[in-house]
Amino acid sequence: YTTNGGKSWKAKDIITPSGLKEAAAYLPSGELIVVGHSGSARSLDKGKTWSILDTRPYHSIHFKEGTGYAVGVDGLISRYTAIKDTSK
Image (cartoon, rainbow, N blue to C red; front, top):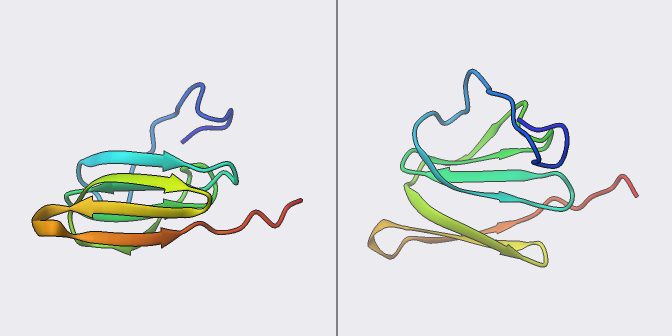
């Protein structure tokens, strides 16, 4: 996880779902999304804790203006909507 916007990272014992993560998206709100063969997960606290979003295998993710798309095997495409930053 990070406490300085991604300049440096600290190891986390467990990311759920576990397994290889192939891509990550770090959003301005501090939300972090990771995807990989074991599925996708979301962190709202910069990587300290994780929530499973999906268990299907993905290879890549990209966000633009709060909407993201993850792509995976056999034409799998999923859309994600970023959680709005309510701290402002």
